Image 1 (tube, chains in turn orange, cyan):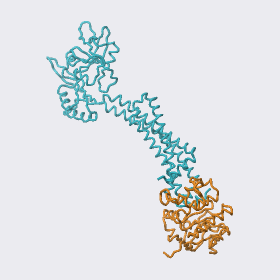
Image 2 (cartoon, one colour; image 1 turned 45 degrees about the vertical axis):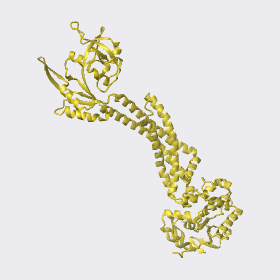
Image 3 (cartoon, one colour; image 1 turned 90 degrees about the vertical axis):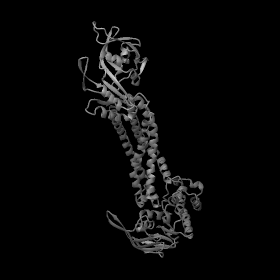
Image 4 (cartoon, chains in turn purple, cyan; image 1 turned 60 degrees about the vertical axis):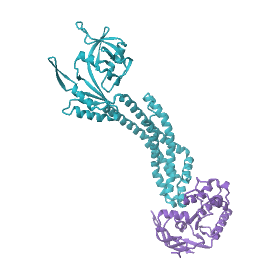
Amino acid sequence: MDDLPLIRLSDVTKTYHLESGDFTALDHVSLDIAENEFVAIMGPSGSGKSTMMNQLGILDVPTSGELFIAGENVAKMSSLERTHMRRDIIGYIFQKFYLIPLLSAYENVEYPLILKYKKRDTTGRATALLEAVGIDTEKGAHRPNQLSGGQQQRVAIARALVNDPKILLCDEPTGNLDRKTGHQIMDILCKLHEEGKTVIIVTHDPKIAEYAHRTIELEDGKVVAS
Amino acid sequence: MKDIFFDLSVRSVRLNFLRSLLASIGIVIGVVAISSMGMLGTNMQLSVKDQLSSNVNTIILTSDTVKVSSSSGTTTTQSGIDKSELNDIKSSAGQNEVIPIHRTSTQFTLGSTNGRGSIYGLDPNDVPKFLTVADGTNLKGGNDALVGATIAQNFNIVPGSSIKIGQNCATVTRPVVRVSGILEARGISSDNVNADNAIIVSDDWYTTHYGNKDLYDQVNVIVNDVDTINQTEDNIDRKVNRNSQVVRISDASSRLSSISSTLGTITTFIMAIGGISLVVAAVSIFNVMMMSVKERVQEIGILLSIGTEKGEVRRMFLYEALILGIIGAVVGGIMSFIIGYSVVSAMIGSTAYFFRPESLIFIPYGMIIGVVVCVVSGLYPAWAASNMDPIDALRSE
């Protein structure tokens, strides 16, 4: 099993049972993503991008086929093990930032550390990461709704990085930002890729996909180019 | 360590301050209802118990068995406890006081006023064991008598007064007693000695005038330790009634326990009525918790997707219920103290028993019940939150 890539989808199908009949969102998809790749997943809406994102993010399991992430068969893990995988191996960056509204920016970054170590951060890691993405201590004390979109996304990136994940999973990370801020965010992601992270971006924006070294195109749940 | 989930719960309560406050008021009312009703009932029980238990340590022995005795040629039949039975009682009563009592009812005259009352014949040494002389002294001389508080008041008797005892009849010279003391009022006493409306004379004087020297109408046994009363009764019963049932044995404790148990039932009942308000409070807590979960679906989705365990999400919502419960219980506890005190003083007229531990214990009881009700109401909302699908939860707006 040691020769498995970081991510392997082998004949993965995901079917949703709807009242109007079954809907196949991913149709026998097979692909590998190696460590330290910079991948863009593209496709029109309804092509299965979100479903793919949920699979790679271990938020969901395949209906059939096998999905290996960091050597583990996702479908064979317990719910708690999947939760721990999400916490330790994957950093999520969402289009709508999804910061926890009741926590300050600093606490949002500290939160995954608390999940992992069951205690408050005393190492200064959360502060250091916030500084690295350009959020100072004064801004760090603010609640998310007091920050601009670009600032919120920076906080979200710091949060995604705090448990030193192997994979950064970004769902339209610049979708809610203006062009200039979007490029700043993409520059941060490029830098992280250079530092050794595996970066996966789901997007429908070709300009954003240009940053990636490899583009996987989805259409009707099938991989049409990779 | 400060728990971040506790922090989140505190912030959520603060964010929805008014809503949380209203839900807590329900708990406050429930806690106040339960604890002040409990305290009221307990204070009632304690005050009744104290009124009754002054003579609860007394065993009353009587006999309806007819004894035949013959003295100087005439045969008399009379019921009562005879000398040998008394000796049996004395020998089986252990260290406890045995008080033989003669009793009859009689007419008496004070000056020119006639009256009627009981007359008791007691050994003067036994008098202080259960009666208190309020004014004057105990029986000393052969013609001394003590009078009860009611008679003394009605006839204006003072120590030194003389009373003629017996039927007022011009042809007979009646014996005269001199009042040596007035007894303290006893009220309704459960040892079957109703001294308030009685004249008490020495047993010698009594038997001289009424006969029945070794036949007693009643024998009281005062036990030193009330917990041994049943054992003492058993001992007496085995000895005195070994051949046949000749002596009837009774005491006030059974009456007391039946009154206490009735009051206990009433207390439970009124507390249950108070409990209804807690049920209402539980519904409102449940409602507030469900609203909190519904409003924070997306937040729950974020928490779950970035790796928060289900148990941690559950804990966050249970903390929230716990906070509402503790706020309600603390405020309720303080208000129970004030309202309970007012209710007890208004309904019972005395707060002498309010600060007894068995009364005040209802405040922590009510508070604990309030907190438990809150947490139980939060169980389902917390479970519902932790079992959401993170994908669906994230998507909701």
